[in-house]
Amino acid sequence: MLLICGTVPLADSILITGKAAFDGEKLLIAGKEISCTQGTAALVSAACVAASHCGILEPQVALAGDCGNGKGSRLIYNYLITQLPALSPTVLVLHYILPVMGLMKKVCDAAGKCPQKPVMIADASSMYAAKAAGLAPLFDIFTPDLCEMAFLADPEALHPAYVSRHLFGAEIAQAPELIASAFRHKNAARTLLLKGAIDHVIQDGKTIATIDKPDIPAMEAIGGTGDTISGMVGAFVAAGFAHTAAAISAAKANRRAAEIIGAKPATKIREIIAALPAAISD
Amino acid sequence: MFGKKNDSGFAGGGLIIFSNVEEAIRAEKVLKKGSYEVKLVAPPPDLRKGCDLALEINIVEETGIARMLLDGGATFVEILPIKGAGELLNIVKTKDFGEAIMVKAGNMKLTFDKRSGVVLNISGGGCPDIPYLHLNMIDKELSSLTRPKDNGYTLCALMLDRAYTEALEIRKKGTA
Image (cartoon, rainbow over all chains, first blue to last red; front, side, top):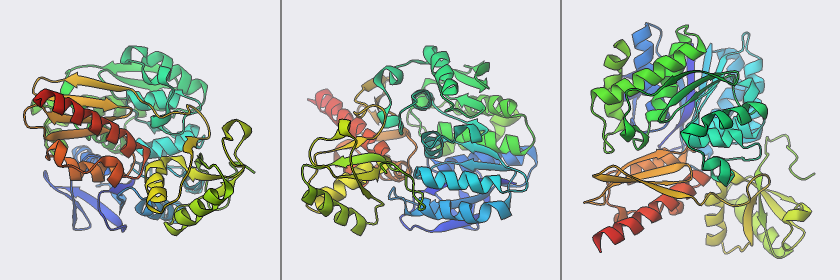
């Protein structure tokens, strides 16, 4: 079972659990419509598309409304800390959840109590919490962008906003230095998918693949293009792909979807998600 | 002990520095009333700039905490991360897409239409207020918007605020 956890932009701090369904336009969780915006909603939508393509069950989700004050995030932490051993997913994707280092540690402890430890995937603020708390080696896959890669490379930073200037200024050509630093300081998961102008797939510190075509510069401006990749990675891993193969397939499908619709800076992420079925099938 | 994790799972990573003990105690009351998890601690010597009392906070919540202190009439010297760079990233870059400009501040990017000034997209970041801010800012004209730091709570919101103010400046120059 693929379990995805994260917050969505609802003012009410309520926890919503259940099966996710994406009908081509709308994301539905247990019959409730969630706006398909950037963030966890985009990740879940892309995971639904990829799961459907692979013929596996739709993702299970634990989403919570959170406008940033952390109330919804704490509902998710509590849900995972108390329920994870019983849920025992095969793949756990942690996404937009307010970083609270101590609570992330408890989530990792709970994952360790599952009959079989889930494949642990983190992106966005859950990746920030895992790194800041020194828990990165417990994770199987991180999916950072270049700025977040600089954050992983900085042994001291607790959030990407406080990354050292010399690391933040790094361009994609300096990715190998950032990757080496992240692994040297034990701030990386075993597999990394570095998302950027050139996507890098890294296993145990070694870059095993890069993807740079089709080149769609506007993707950097479109909110949610990183989220869709992470969602597809989760679904492909749940379908049995090797971690690096899942990363490569997701990166390629994302670029292809943007190409199919002729993505521009004004393109919305739901348009790219709508093109994912065709992109994955290519 | 400074920075020690307790049973509640609190390990904040940030400090509020005060000029005197009264300010620190008042700030603690204001933040606890606002349901923020905080802890009075002794700042390490290299971060000691006023009194011997500081408040440990979750540094990610810096934006919401600063706003609550100001609204609650509590004063402080500054908010600092316990480790790493002592200053927020202040690097702002732009990318011209022809019909649109993307402004990148730290880990956040805001893209607006050159002619209309409408926000086309917000990307980057990872904190929970970003999708919320995204939903409230997208497809609206820059000058009609509330600043992200006034609606957001996290460091990502603060970086988005920098991108937003820079975008406003670019827009003003472009239409002047």
